[in-house]
Length: 158
Image 1 (tube, rainbow, N blue to C red):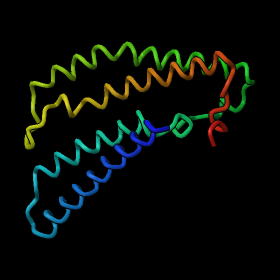
Image 2: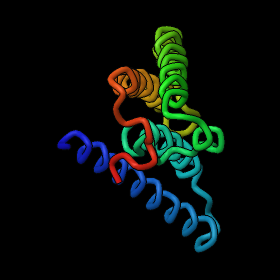
Image 3: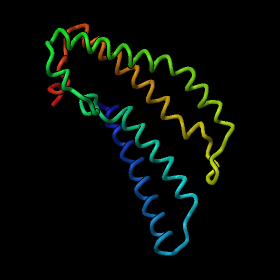
């Protein structure tokens, strides 16, 4: 619970920074007719961080977009099998992608953003965090499905 509060606080601060950057950008562009190149770049970087951070650590599995027409029409046994296969595929692909993704992100440390001069390693780091989170969530989902718990994710943790 404590880690969730920290993740939510970080997500909120990232969004606040994005919002403030956006306000500075609008004020400079339309109020003073002086567009600021750094605000465009920072807004893009913060947007990337907000989306990937929220997906990795803030939004619970039951809140992610899903198409549940098939899920609602099958038996609990089939749902369990679907969860096992789904979590195995998602977690397996995330685990398989981590080494190459980290290698690329680490390789991009040599490149800098055009205006702010930030290392692209920091720009793309949340993608690796997302993959790690997907792997951990999939492992948790597999354990839950193997123990025949939490099969209806729409009703779990209301």
